[in-house]
Image (cartoon, rainbow, N blue to C red; front, top):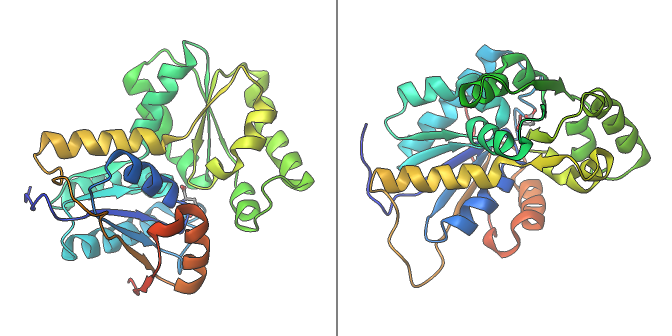
Length: 271
Ligand code: DGL
C-alpha cells in the first residue's frame, strides 16, 4: 500500500449530495484534514442500479481520487460500500473506509440484544451487507432489513415532513416496529435528513443509527494507525468539492449542509 504524505487530502465520494453528512462528521472529528468530495450527481441514484454498474462507478471515482493524490478514501454511499468496498480495498493503493461496518457496530451496541432494523436502498438491502457486518460482530443479533426505495426521491424533493412522506415511512417501518427492533440503522445517505420524522414514528424505545459519526471515528483510527494524520494547522484547511453534473445546484444544496465550508464546486465527468 502506497503511503502518501500526511498533508494529502482524504477523498470522500457518494452518488450525490447526501454524503455531505459524512463530510460534516469528518470535519468535526478531523478538523485539520483537507477533504476532496465527489458527488456523482450525473449518475445518481445508485440504489436501483446493478452491482456491476455501481462497482464500475466506484472504480472510476476511486481511481480519480487516487490520481488527485488522496491519502485515503471514504465511501460515504451505502450502496457503493455494499457492492464495491472489498474491491476498492483490494485495488486502490490507499486505505479505504466504508459506512456499513461502522454503522453495524454502532447498531449492535445500541440494540442491547433486541432486534436491529436496517433500512436502505434496494441495492444495499439486496446485497445483505448490513446483515453480514452485524453477524460478524454478533451472530445472535436478529436483523430485519427493508428496502425503502420511495424515500430517496421524497428527500430529494425536500418533502421531509409532508403527509405523503409520513405515510410512506410509516408503511415501511410498520413490520420492523411490530417485531420489536431496538435500533434502526439509517442505511442510506439521505435518511438522516428524515431523522425527526423517523424518530417520531419509531418512538423513544428505538435508537436511530446514523453511521456518519462512526465512520469518521474509523477514518481517524485508520489514519493514526498508518501515521497519516495531518499536523495541526493555524488556519482552517481548504476543501475541494466536485460534482459530475449541475455544480451550481450542488453548491446551493451543499451550502445548506456545510455553510461556509463550501464556496465553489468543480465539474468533472467520469466514465
Ligand atoms: N447514496 C445512496 C446510498 O447511501 C442513496 C442515493 C442513491 O440511491 O444513490 O445508498
